[in-house]
Image (cartoon, rainbow, N blue to C red; front, side, top):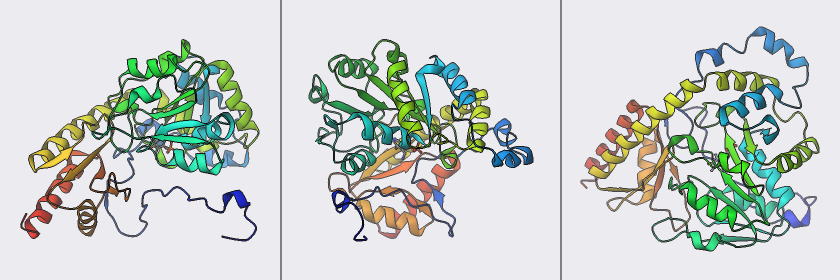
Length: 354
Ligand code: PMP
């Protein structure tokens, strides 16, 4: 750390992304990417012509993507803002709406705490209950902004829409941000509720269900007033926050929505298969509504399972937080990926005679 960094940032602990190995080839089940490539139409949307157009700035209004997104989500274009990954939508929110504090779960997406620290916010972490369910009562009429991932990460557990609505309704003077990064894998989206509540902001991403993690594109949906504020923040930081190629491919992705929703159905099937097979091998696996599962075995410490899988070429995500260090978060891939994971698990158990 240099002596020039602002003193308020001296203690900053940055977010640690999952490993992105560049040399060895792994069955990569550690960062919740889609195992499926973008659709043919999306792949064909970028050619020499689009590359040539890179000399021009991108559309600062992101009109083409926002119109299609609005159609897919059943809202108006004015209710949408497009961001550089959903992390940027979260960044805008924490940076610009949370001066009176913010509340989120203790075990959830790690970036919330990083943003809260980055902006020196007054924040409270509400412990998940021992079974990792959300302590919903603690969020009712809490009178602070709320950030809630639904389904939650890394647990995969989802709250019903009625509970989300209760949290939104009981905090009318504050914003409830619902992070729906994993909503397409079986949860109930709160997007329709944005028409009824002006204090609800729903954040989504193209990184998981829409196979565009590397393109960096996300979005937020909310009342026209809230979204207009988000645009003001966007224009005050980087008006060209999403690059031309990404806007182009994202339009094609939204034109091909059925392909992606069908992939989600396949991932859900593979999730149910992997859950059942791991349970058959004695693992505790939470009931996930996401494209990952959260699993532990009494037979092997979480870190050892992670390391031994890695040795065998299977990468999963291990967290060191003591409440969850016996677990691993395993991204759902293709059926073949899941079979590789299961065979590697069987080999590990055999080697250890457990
Ligand atoms: N929210 C949650 C809950 C996530 O797990 C992730 C993925 N790391 C994100 C948001 C950010 O995803 P992206 O910036 O790729 O849209």
